Amino acid sequence: MYKKMLGDTIYRLRKEKGLSQSELGELVGVSNKAVSKWETYEANPDITLLPLLAQVLGVTTDELLTDIKTQKNDPKARETTVFGLPGTVIETPEKYEFVSDKKTKKELPYVHIHIGKQIQTANAKARGIIAIGNNAIGIISIGLISVGLISIGLISTGLLALGLLAEGIVAIGIFAFGGVTLGVIAIGVVSIGVIAIGYVSFGVISVGHYANTITGGRAFGRHIFIR
Image (cartoon, rainbow, N blue to C red; front, side):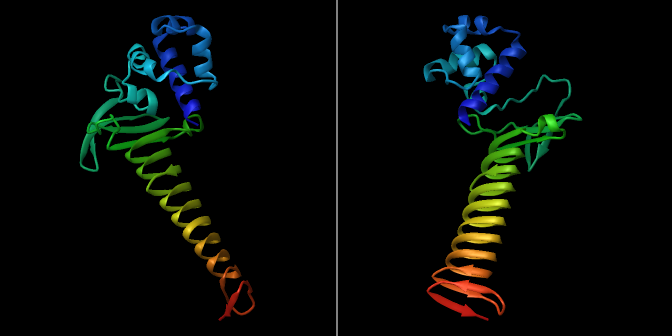
């Protein structure tokens, strides 16, 4: 995933600069074949090249690695405040994107919202302490695909995960996997669902060391309880 994201970013920024693979390679001291391998996910640039590569492409190293850039010179950009934090927003028929001015020492925004409105922007990436978008990664993340300590999305992974497919220490979803799970199909140490599998399980079909079900249900385990 990392190679693909970085390769896509290098390709996009190179095209924006109007550079060929040979021209980019010459500017950073590598061959056009090396650039081609970066963009086709066969290899990553040497870590020592990243600062120069970012400079040539007109972004910071962190922006290069996370694909986050505040387009303050974009004519569609305007200043606004989200969650009490000032930042830059760009809203078009294709997307809505907000990047807060306040960032961590590694240039990661406190808030990044990136929502694609059309199918071609369905992979819109949001990376921040609070990340909201089609593809969100953050301490708190909300998106179609979300990863974070607290994660909400159709597909979510985190310590606390809520979604259609949820995986986490505490997971709630249609398909839930984790320490404590709640879902139609729940798998975990303690699981509650129509189909529940876990050390302690509660469900119409229940499998576990302690399996709890209702009258008419099915329980399989060392200790079975029917209510």
